[in-house]
Image (cartoon, rainbow, N blue to C red; front, side, top):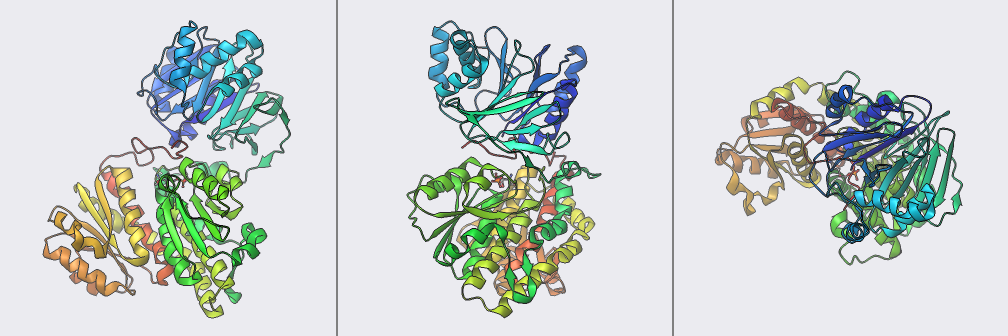
Length: 607
Ligand code: M6R
């Protein structure tokens, strides 16, 4: 949520900053702005292209600057509210991701001291607070630290001053900041994506830390001004992974990466002959895991739905009671947790504020915290006791697709791990491992049907409502399929457990309200076909996701998409793929920008 990028070095910073912002666009697109210490600022409402269009009229140059993409929280997406924000003298400029909760009190105090505000954002108080402290401290670092000690809330910031053009100061509390360490150039960003094309050496700031960079140096301090030594980490993502590589949209590229993602998530982790999964990230807590008797899974959005599938897997095969909850609810309950409870957090970004707070709350209560996280080095990855990295590569589309496939795969590996520690037999373990291994090829056969799926999506693209229904393992897939359609096409879509239809939702069905029914040839097939019949009896149109070879379902459904057979536990990893493709083609047909759905941002770092 909100993207920050900053550069100081020996090159012209403007193209570097614009390029960095373009690669961060999934973090926000309400407005964009840059400040270059040697010449000034430009801002524009909307995405980075609007900012680029303004450059010829207001050329700016300089070897150091800060840049921002806004996802509006306080104040409308106007140019006045676009970052960077400045102090009264237009000397100190700030970009910010997060929320300054006490900004009203601080603003009133600063106004009473003679400061003039130009925007209705919470961020602007930071620039004026720094100005205020600078008068007394006469030192930019000290003034930034003093200002941060006055604020309550969350922040990831970058600060630049006209008087010290080579220097940029960053700080974080609850919103991610990463430093990129190059040769005679250094960077600051919200995540490593814009840094990758310049250097793979990074340092993740921790909460309560401040960093000062110049072209040739980087230093980290605490908010008490104590120097911190931290080694650089090497990122193993490639630049190509954050590009579209010939696809029209990241969403399509990432759906097509499904088979490769499963290979990467499972690489070196499956011992098929022994029916085991080998999870290096859990080794140090393996013995403690044997003693655990309850799992609480926490995630938001798509990650939460992955958790719901995990509940079915873990209860059936590992025999451990599981509860799943969205982070934003978990943290406001009084959850009953003890030292035999696992809190399993699922998060692609590893930065989702509600999931992170749930982890912190569970830790305070003595739980063992585990993470299934894609972004290496992210806050959730660092704060959990142990975990499984997805290795899905960077996900750039705001709508999560390949990360979900990888999360389900990681949950299957975890089920195997915990199941074999408990009552799962060798033969069941082997069967699951073999089936996991076969998934990439099976997904490939679904992807090969993409033109047929496009034709079906285009046939229904005029619908304004959609119902998704499934049962058991595929109930969460109905929820996730509906979420995908909602977020990229903005149409009303609801996901239901098919057994619930008679308890209310069936009332909505008529000839204009189509249903996507996940009806595999599994233990709930007969029940699903009954539900489909009930829809047909109300003149509802039905698209069925059915098991390869099931042709009889054509007598019931208006359209059919086939997926290969696998064991029930792994079937969601296949059934989600046609639903992702369907949502993609449906939205594209309706002219939507699937990579940048309105009102959304990729990483939700505020509550
Ligand atoms: O980074 P996370 O996995 O923690 O993000 C959680 C949700 O914000 C995310 O899955 C969101 O629901 C996606 N836009 C869904 O496509």
